[in-house]
Length: 318
Image (cartoon, rainbow, N blue to C red; front, side):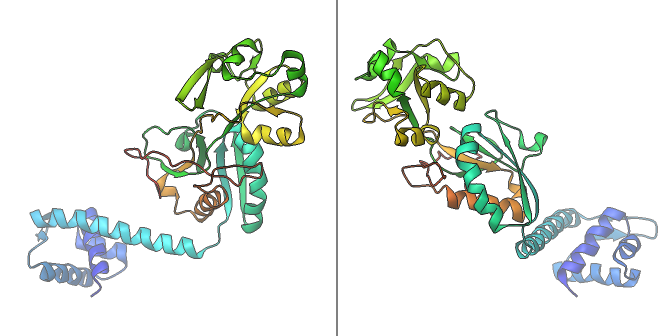
Protein backbone atom coordinates (compact mmCIF):
# COMPACT_ATOMS: atom_id res chain seq x y z
CA UNK A 1 0.00 0.00 0.00
CA UNK A 2 1.08 3.57 -0.60
CA UNK A 3 2.63 4.99 2.57
CA UNK A 4 1.17 8.48 2.12
CA UNK A 5 -2.33 7.04 1.57
CA UNK A 6 -1.99 5.05 4.78
CA UNK A 7 -0.84 8.16 6.65
CA UNK A 8 -3.86 10.08 5.37
CA UNK A 9 -6.23 7.35 6.54
CA UNK A 10 -4.55 7.29 9.94
CA UNK A 11 -4.77 11.08 10.36
CA UNK A 12 -8.46 11.01 9.42
CA UNK A 13 -9.12 8.16 11.85
CA UNK A 14 -7.58 10.19 14.67
CA UNK A 15 -9.38 13.40 13.77
CA UNK A 16 -12.78 11.87 13.04
CA UNK A 17 -12.70 9.42 15.92
CA UNK A 18 -13.01 6.10 14.08
CA UNK A 19 -11.77 4.07 11.14
CA UNK A 20 -15.27 3.91 9.66
CA UNK A 21 -15.49 7.71 9.62
CA UNK A 22 -12.05 7.91 8.03
CA UNK A 23 -13.12 5.35 5.42
CA UNK A 24 -16.22 7.40 4.57
CA UNK A 25 -14.14 10.56 4.25
CA UNK A 26 -11.70 8.84 1.91
CA UNK A 27 -14.39 7.02 -0.06
CA UNK A 28 -13.06 3.56 0.76
CA UNK A 29 -14.41 0.58 2.69
CA UNK A 30 -13.92 0.20 6.45
CA UNK A 31 -11.97 -2.99 5.71
CA UNK A 32 -9.58 -1.09 3.48
CA UNK A 33 -9.14 1.59 6.14
CA UNK A 34 -8.26 -1.12 8.63
CA UNK A 35 -5.72 -2.55 6.21
CA UNK A 36 -4.03 0.88 5.94
CA UNK A 37 -3.77 1.10 9.71
CA UNK A 38 -2.37 -2.43 10.04
CA UNK A 39 0.17 -1.67 7.32
CA UNK A 40 1.46 1.28 9.32
CA UNK A 41 1.57 -0.70 12.56
CA UNK A 42 3.46 -3.55 10.91
CA UNK A 43 5.90 -1.06 9.44
CA UNK A 44 6.51 0.52 12.85
CA UNK A 45 6.36 -2.70 14.84
CA UNK A 46 4.08 -1.09 17.42
CA UNK A 47 0.41 -0.34 17.89
CA UNK A 48 -0.90 3.14 17.07
CA UNK A 49 -4.52 2.86 18.22
CA UNK A 50 -6.23 0.92 20.98
CA UNK A 51 -9.67 0.04 19.61
CA UNK A 52 -12.79 -1.37 21.23
CA UNK A 53 -16.31 -1.72 19.89
CA UNK A 54 -17.24 1.65 21.41
CA UNK A 55 -14.15 3.84 21.21
CA UNK A 56 -10.54 4.21 20.26
CA UNK A 57 -7.62 6.04 21.84
CA UNK A 58 -4.06 6.76 20.82
CA UNK A 59 -1.04 5.00 22.18
CA UNK A 60 2.00 7.09 23.17
CA UNK A 61 3.58 6.28 19.82
CA UNK A 62 0.28 6.98 18.10
CA UNK A 63 0.18 10.56 19.42
CA UNK A 64 3.71 11.30 18.21
CA UNK A 65 3.17 9.55 14.89
CA UNK A 66 -0.05 11.50 14.29
CA UNK A 67 1.80 14.84 14.68
CA UNK A 68 4.58 13.69 12.37
CA UNK A 69 2.13 12.43 9.75
CA UNK A 70 0.34 15.79 9.79
CA UNK A 71 3.60 17.61 9.16
CA UNK A 72 4.70 15.21 6.41
CA UNK A 73 1.35 15.47 4.62
CA UNK A 74 1.43 19.29 4.92
CA UNK A 75 4.89 19.46 3.36
CA UNK A 76 3.89 17.12 0.55
CA UNK A 77 0.77 19.18 -0.18
CA UNK A 78 2.77 22.42 -0.21
CA UNK A 79 5.37 20.93 -2.52
CA UNK A 80 2.67 19.74 -4.91
CA UNK A 81 1.03 23.19 -4.85
CA UNK A 82 4.34 24.90 -5.47
CA UNK A 83 5.06 22.63 -8.42
CA UNK A 84 1.64 23.34 -9.88
CA UNK A 85 2.10 27.09 -9.38
CA UNK A 86 5.46 27.03 -11.13
CA UNK A 87 3.79 25.43 -14.11
CA UNK A 88 1.00 27.99 -14.26
CA UNK A 89 1.36 31.43 -15.81
CA UNK A 90 1.34 34.41 -13.41
CA UNK A 91 -2.08 36.05 -13.39
CA UNK A 92 -4.31 38.26 -11.28
CA UNK A 93 -3.96 41.54 -9.40
CA UNK A 94 -0.79 42.32 -7.45
CA UNK A 95 -0.97 44.99 -4.71
CA UNK A 96 2.32 46.76 -4.07
CA UNK A 97 3.35 49.61 -1.76
CA UNK A 98 6.32 51.85 -2.66
CA UNK A 99 7.81 55.15 -1.49
CA UNK A 100 6.54 58.14 -3.46
CA UNK A 101 9.77 59.28 -5.07
CA UNK A 102 11.14 55.85 -5.91
CA UNK A 103 7.74 54.70 -7.11
CA UNK A 104 7.32 57.70 -9.40
CA UNK A 105 10.84 58.05 -10.76
CA UNK A 106 12.10 54.46 -10.91
CA UNK A 107 9.33 51.91 -10.44
CA UNK A 108 6.87 53.41 -12.92
CA UNK A 109 9.34 53.35 -15.86
CA UNK A 110 10.30 49.79 -14.97
CA UNK A 111 6.74 48.48 -14.75
CA UNK A 112 6.19 48.72 -18.49
CA UNK A 113 8.70 45.91 -18.99
CA UNK A 114 7.14 43.76 -16.26
CA UNK A 115 3.59 44.16 -17.58
CA UNK A 116 4.75 43.41 -21.11
CA UNK A 117 6.46 40.25 -19.87
CA UNK A 118 3.42 39.04 -17.89
CA UNK A 119 0.27 40.17 -19.72
CA UNK A 120 -2.11 38.34 -17.38
CA UNK A 121 -0.94 40.28 -14.30
CA UNK A 122 -2.31 43.67 -13.25
CA UNK A 123 -0.46 45.80 -10.69
CA UNK A 124 -2.10 48.08 -8.13
CA UNK A 125 0.63 50.38 -6.78
CA UNK A 126 0.05 52.50 -3.69
CA UNK A 127 2.64 55.27 -3.34
CA UNK A 128 3.20 56.31 0.26
CA UNK A 129 6.18 57.12 2.46
CA UNK A 130 4.61 55.46 5.49
CA UNK A 131 5.31 51.86 6.48
CA UNK A 132 2.27 49.78 5.55
CA UNK A 133 1.11 46.59 7.25
CA UNK A 134 1.14 43.95 4.52
CA UNK A 135 -1.32 41.65 6.28
CA UNK A 136 -3.80 44.22 7.60
CA UNK A 137 -3.82 46.34 4.43
CA UNK A 138 -3.74 43.53 1.90
CA UNK A 139 -0.41 44.24 0.20
CA UNK A 140 1.60 41.38 -1.25
CA UNK A 141 4.90 43.26 -1.25
CA UNK A 142 6.34 46.60 -0.21
CA UNK A 143 9.49 48.48 -1.17
CA UNK A 144 11.14 50.01 1.88
CA UNK A 145 14.03 52.41 2.31
CA UNK A 146 16.35 52.34 5.31
CA UNK A 147 17.38 49.76 7.85
CA UNK A 148 14.71 47.14 8.49
CA UNK A 149 13.48 46.26 11.97
CA UNK A 150 13.31 42.64 12.99
CA UNK A 151 10.17 41.03 11.60
CA UNK A 152 8.81 37.84 10.06
CA UNK A 153 9.00 39.41 6.59
CA UNK A 154 11.41 38.18 3.94
CA UNK A 155 13.68 40.98 2.65
CA UNK A 156 15.45 41.07 -0.72
CA UNK A 157 18.02 43.87 -1.17
CA UNK A 158 17.53 46.32 -4.02
CA UNK A 159 19.15 49.64 -4.93
CA UNK A 160 20.80 51.99 -2.49
CA UNK A 161 19.09 55.32 -2.17
CA UNK A 162 21.68 57.96 -3.12
CA UNK A 163 21.15 61.59 -2.20
CA UNK A 164 22.22 64.88 -3.80
CA UNK A 165 22.54 68.46 -2.62
CA UNK A 166 21.53 70.88 -5.35
CA UNK A 167 20.52 74.48 -6.00
CA UNK A 168 19.41 76.42 -9.05
CA UNK A 169 21.84 78.67 -10.94
CA UNK A 170 19.55 81.59 -10.10
CA UNK A 171 19.78 80.94 -6.36
CA UNK A 172 23.57 80.57 -6.50
CA UNK A 173 23.88 83.79 -8.51
CA UNK A 174 21.90 85.67 -5.84
CA UNK A 175 23.28 84.05 -2.70
CA UNK A 176 26.67 82.77 -3.79
CA UNK A 177 27.88 79.18 -4.02
CA UNK A 178 28.81 77.48 -0.76
CA UNK A 179 32.38 76.24 -1.07
CA UNK A 180 32.41 74.16 2.11
CA UNK A 181 29.63 72.12 3.74
CA UNK A 182 29.86 74.43 6.75
CA UNK A 183 28.69 77.29 4.51
CA UNK A 184 25.23 75.69 4.31
CA UNK A 185 24.36 77.20 7.67
CA UNK A 186 24.37 80.62 5.95
CA UNK A 187 21.91 79.56 3.24
CA UNK A 188 18.21 78.83 2.80
CA UNK A 189 17.93 75.05 2.97
CA UNK A 190 14.74 73.36 1.86
CA UNK A 191 13.47 70.53 4.01
CA UNK A 192 10.99 67.68 3.90
CA UNK A 193 10.05 68.37 7.52
CA UNK A 194 11.31 70.51 10.43
CA UNK A 195 12.96 67.41 11.95
CA UNK A 196 14.96 66.79 8.78
CA UNK A 197 16.16 70.39 8.75
CA UNK A 198 18.20 70.31 11.95
CA UNK A 199 21.34 69.00 10.22
CA UNK A 200 22.50 67.20 7.12
CA UNK A 201 24.88 64.26 7.43
CA UNK A 202 27.88 64.10 5.09
CA UNK A 203 31.06 62.08 4.62
CA UNK A 204 34.53 63.61 4.48
CA UNK A 205 38.13 62.46 4.59
CA UNK A 206 37.93 62.24 8.38
CA UNK A 207 34.63 60.37 8.48
CA UNK A 208 31.01 61.37 8.87
CA UNK A 209 29.97 64.74 10.18
CA UNK A 210 26.78 66.78 10.50
CA UNK A 211 26.23 70.25 9.12
CA UNK A 212 23.66 72.48 10.88
CA UNK A 213 21.17 73.89 8.37
CA UNK A 214 18.09 76.08 8.52
CA UNK A 215 15.47 77.53 6.21
CA UNK A 216 12.02 79.05 6.06
CA UNK A 217 10.36 76.47 3.80
CA UNK A 218 9.41 72.90 4.63
CA UNK A 219 7.33 70.77 2.26
CA UNK A 220 6.16 67.19 2.87
CA UNK A 221 6.63 66.13 -0.76
CA UNK A 222 9.83 65.45 -2.67
CA UNK A 223 8.57 66.75 -6.02
CA UNK A 224 7.42 69.97 -4.40
CA UNK A 225 10.89 70.44 -2.91
CA UNK A 226 12.42 69.89 -6.35
CA UNK A 227 10.13 72.52 -7.85
CA UNK A 228 11.00 74.92 -5.02
CA UNK A 229 14.70 74.41 -5.73
CA UNK A 230 14.18 74.92 -9.47
CA UNK A 231 12.52 78.27 -8.69
CA UNK A 232 15.43 79.43 -6.62
CA UNK A 233 13.87 79.11 -3.16
CA UNK A 234 16.86 77.40 -1.63
CA UNK A 235 19.25 74.46 -1.48
CA UNK A 236 17.71 71.01 -1.51
CA UNK A 237 18.82 67.57 -0.28
CA UNK A 238 16.82 64.89 -2.06
CA UNK A 239 17.24 61.48 -3.78
CA UNK A 240 19.45 61.46 -6.86
CA UNK A 241 16.73 59.84 -8.97
CA UNK A 242 14.63 62.96 -8.39
CA UNK A 243 17.31 65.56 -9.17
CA UNK A 244 19.84 64.09 -11.59
CA UNK A 245 17.89 64.85 -14.77
CA UNK A 246 17.69 68.52 -13.76
CA UNK A 247 21.43 68.50 -13.02
CA UNK A 248 22.15 66.99 -16.44
CA UNK A 249 19.95 69.62 -18.10
CA UNK A 250 21.62 72.48 -16.21
CA UNK A 251 18.48 73.45 -14.32
CA UNK A 252 20.14 72.52 -11.02
CA UNK A 253 23.76 72.54 -9.91
CA UNK A 254 25.09 69.71 -7.78
CA UNK A 255 26.95 70.95 -4.70
CA UNK A 256 29.83 69.21 -2.93
CA UNK A 257 30.20 66.31 -5.37
CA UNK A 258 33.47 65.45 -3.65
CA UNK A 259 31.62 64.68 -0.42
CA UNK A 260 29.70 61.46 -0.07
CA UNK A 261 26.20 61.53 1.29
CA UNK A 262 24.64 58.65 3.23
CA UNK A 263 23.46 55.76 1.07
CA UNK A 264 20.29 54.27 2.47
CA UNK A 265 19.63 50.55 1.84
CA UNK A 266 16.46 49.64 -0.01
CA UNK A 267 14.64 46.31 -0.12
CA UNK A 268 11.46 44.62 -1.21
CA UNK A 269 9.70 42.78 1.61
CA UNK A 270 6.95 40.17 1.54
CA UNK A 271 5.44 37.37 3.60
CA UNK A 272 7.18 34.06 3.11
CA UNK A 273 4.01 32.04 2.60
CA UNK A 274 2.89 34.31 -0.26
CA UNK A 275 6.10 33.87 -2.26
CA UNK A 276 4.68 30.69 -3.79
CA UNK A 277 2.27 32.87 -5.76
CA UNK A 278 3.60 33.05 -9.35
CA UNK A 279 2.65 36.71 -9.73
CA UNK A 280 4.49 37.72 -6.56
CA UNK A 281 7.54 35.56 -7.29
CA UNK A 282 7.89 36.96 -10.80
CA UNK A 283 7.49 40.53 -9.52
CA UNK A 284 10.11 40.13 -6.78
CA UNK A 285 12.49 38.43 -9.21
CA UNK A 286 11.89 41.25 -11.70
CA UNK A 287 12.75 43.91 -9.10
CA UNK A 288 15.95 42.09 -8.14
CA UNK A 289 16.86 41.83 -11.83
CA UNK A 290 15.96 45.43 -12.69
CA UNK A 291 17.46 47.01 -9.57
CA UNK A 292 20.37 44.64 -8.95
CA UNK A 293 22.44 44.59 -5.80
CA UNK A 294 26.08 45.47 -6.32
CA UNK A 295 26.24 48.47 -8.67
CA UNK A 296 27.19 51.92 -7.45
CA UNK A 297 24.82 54.16 -9.37
CA UNK A 298 21.18 54.63 -10.20
CA UNK A 299 19.51 56.39 -13.09
CA UNK A 300 15.97 57.55 -13.68
CA UNK A 301 15.00 54.37 -15.51
CA UNK A 302 15.86 52.35 -12.47
CA UNK A 303 19.05 50.45 -13.26
CA UNK A 304 20.66 50.64 -9.84
CA UNK A 305 21.99 48.79 -6.87
CA UNK A 306 22.26 48.71 -3.13
CA UNK A 307 24.84 48.22 -0.47
CA UNK A 308 24.17 44.90 1.27
CA UNK A 309 21.52 44.94 3.95
CA UNK A 310 22.56 43.84 7.43
CA UNK A 311 21.34 40.44 8.47
CA UNK A 312 18.54 40.67 11.01
CA UNK A 313 17.50 37.98 13.43
CA UNK A 314 14.37 37.19 11.48
CA UNK A 315 14.61 39.18 8.25
CA UNK A 316 15.70 36.53 5.77
CA UNK A 317 17.30 36.94 2.38
CA UNK A 318 16.27 34.53 -0.28
